[in-house]
Length: 350
Image 1 (cartoon, rainbow, N blue to C red):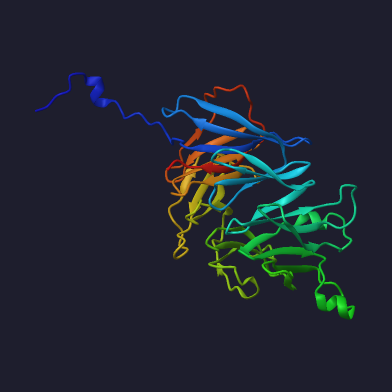
Image 2: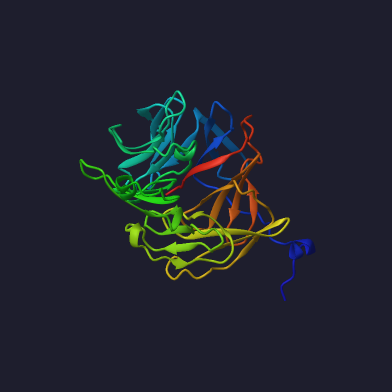
């Protein structure tokens, strides 16, 4: 019979360390009229310290390309492109811009600009990575704030889609018919001439993965969300019914597993995902944490871990299977404080 040398060692439970972060996290920190800081976070291999490095200042938006090797970001003066490997940045477009979005092949991006003097039409542009731009659409609805409201999303390497409130069909312009209250517009930008089609809005894209899988929100907001395996031909897409509960928070990077959260109690949030093959619901985990409607999430390619940023000072690492949560800056070696952190890209270790 084998006995323990120390009785206390026999009864000691294994130490539970919680989820462990690896790689690099880039996030926006601070929310002021002058923009936010772009901050890089790394964690020591033993998890003892978190290191912060401010990369750029005065950012209003930032988004990584599909393979997460380049970062596009907007300041009050320009759009810049930064290589995430050597970390070099170059200016692409002058002027204050917003609604940054990458084409799925990473060769183009779209953005909007409003007149610097205020008023006037908001314009949608497409640019290549050398800063060569093309005007795609100009909002002439005359309704204040409408042009700012709807950002374009890419549904194929040369096609993008956006909503227009108060938009008008081309036919309506020619025949003086009444304006349609809600319009979906598709633009094809591959050739010298921009081609497009307008039709009545049935749903909007909440999120789209590199494979073309998309989560759709019906125009009738009382209806549940929908799932489309591909939205390349958005005019004729026939989506499937999605889960009847839960808020979509994002796809796992590169693997396109969609994740959802729902608050079951005042102190607990349920987290679940869908199998991207058959859209069946996978196991639900319970997180002893609640999140605001503005919380932003990044899910690792393996769908095992996610990062959540939430106002005013939450930056959390979450195990999607167990629901375990660990703060990412529990022992930061820097003096910088978290202020409305927004995770932008998780550069994973190979």
